[in-house]
Image (cartoon, rainbow, N blue to C red):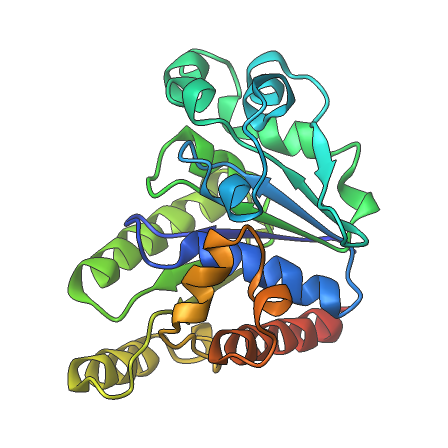
Length: 256
């Protein structure tokens, strides 16, 4: 059964796209066939893999015209595909979809013909709670909230949690799992330790056991247009994301 996962937070700059890219790459290394969808108008996931923003082959055209999703294979990777985004086109997409009946279900309809071709579909959402994020949540089985251990990131997490509860009640009853991933963690900072403890106490099993430490290799990999595993398999970033992938993989297996 295909697992569809949205990666989100109401606040940008918390490692959302980094998580989307490296979670996808890690699961691919665990022999999963993976599709990534860049739903962010900033097109950061597209840039992460060094891909061009082709206006005629982006998520924009599919959402606007209800056409086939333009899937692009990532070079040198087997069973690892992406639907790219385009900053110029996506800037006004929410306004263009505002009057469309059933606008929150467009992505779900577009995925229906190809969903079963993949083991995992990962959607990189915008840092907002607009139509694009609702489209992602309406078709997802799981949402992962990337949370940097800082006050404003936690504020964003609370808003996302409230929104997901409403989506589950009103739009998608299959959104059964919402988990928090701590990113950019520095164990030497007392405030990080305190926030991590607070989140784990409050959200219990909804927090991943694995955390993502601050690691310059993650930024360097993105700059090189690749994932952390192909950039530096021995880095802390690769270790942390593979731990996350294995934790998620075990959860997926247990659901079968």
